[in-house]
Image (cartoon, rainbow, N blue to C red; front, side):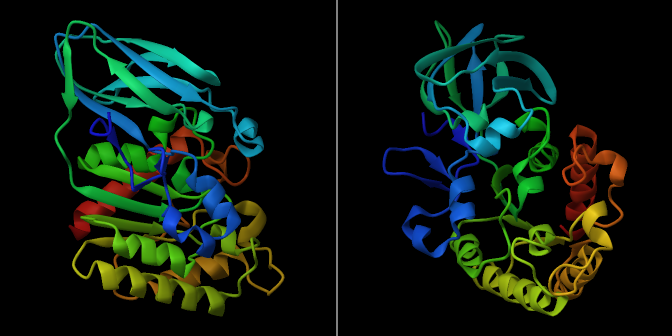
Length: 314
């Protein structure tokens, strides 16, 4: 089973996917660790032979208060390339089964999980056919906040790291932490310690108010974060994405006198010679479903811009 799961950085003692190092839990902010328990971006990638139906046995929990607020429907989503081939509803359960009908008996498929329910996959049954892991791909670490995690998309496979990862042909490891990801050095050290072929860093929005940063402080935070990541990955392609538009913050000063526009500019200066994708012009307010988070169209635009930037730098 472990060989079928992709997008995993760490596991708990009982085998659950984690998105932060449990050995380092005491150095992480509580909000980062809370989101690290949600398997954002974790998926099954498999090659099928003579398979008509996949039966996925799983256990799942009630969503957290934060995840219950989201409009995302908890389903297992079967992708054939970029096409949704089938979906199966998911529910909190100690022993459930999701049934997915394949569009053809041969080929490679991806199954995205109902992330908000923190599912644990018990078994994948292919009936009389056979299932094997899809080929290994280069590993892409994507660090950031709720927008990286995929907040406000209608399905997990439409989050920009998932979209961009498929376009680039990489194994995307989503290290986005909703409400968190303020460039803590503990997170930088975890990225530095992971195997990676490609890295993207996209944070700064939560530094406007959770907690507030000045532009000078965020500049130093970003510089330090990138320095630590580079110590572990001196040669891996690295891309910095500065914060996207946020109308309530772009021209409103926080407690330390910094607008989000000021913080965005600090991130861009701090990137130095690291390739940069300026986020301020990538979206407009119409792409935001709640004034902060982009919906499906916004994530698609972000994915397209990130893919283009990575290809230029690669």
